[in-house]
Length: 301
Image (cartoon, rainbow, N blue to C red; front, side):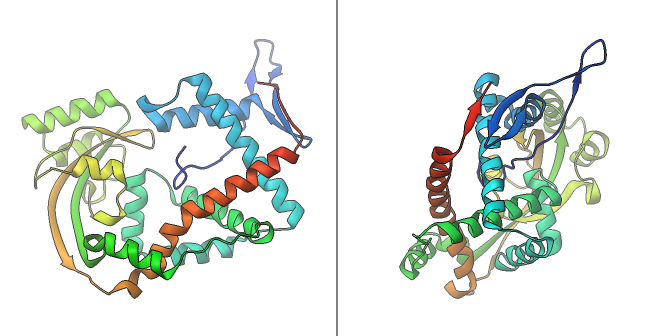
């Protein structure tokens, strides 16, 4: 599961037998706290829906999700032991810093969430999780995560075009519930049977404001979006692609490049965060391994 946009949410779903008795069972016990089958199934179904055709088989996905739920529970237990907390104001401050570092307006940030197929609340949950990880590591990990000025300079030089020129795209997107629906809409637009405006108004389950038209910065797009948009000329429509369990068809309206070179100082903290994240994740996985080694974990799957 992908780090930057995956969340360990737990949903409680109770299945009922014909005679009305609630049927559930324990699939894992972690230091005396339980994870139930209904929790596991709800999160597994969510994971499979997001992953789409590239997902693991159901059994492998269920095992991976259970492993993630165990880790989530261990992190919460460790936070309670260390009395580490993350308040709502901490999350709001982190959100403001996130937008400031990336020079995003509120509208641009919201467009980014839309492109990723997540809600603001889901994004805040991820911020809260990231803050919790950093604070636990601050308590327990002796080897601090350090990004040197030399590393920042090297990254800046290697990505000069990204940071020294702003590539902005105006796109129009239709979000469809299934691959079949997306293929039909894309084919109809390609043939000229309907316009993209009509596709958004009549079939899209995504944002319809301004007929689904929005401006995005190339540097804010992940690999899925970049692959879909690469090679498109103004007016052309992409093949359907999967984003967070929904199928998307996007039309490139226009593209422009602006000179936004503010020098390395303007993007220093953004680059520091980019470089720190994999280092932080490595340290955290080492710490999680030590927690699991000491924990009493009984898997009953």
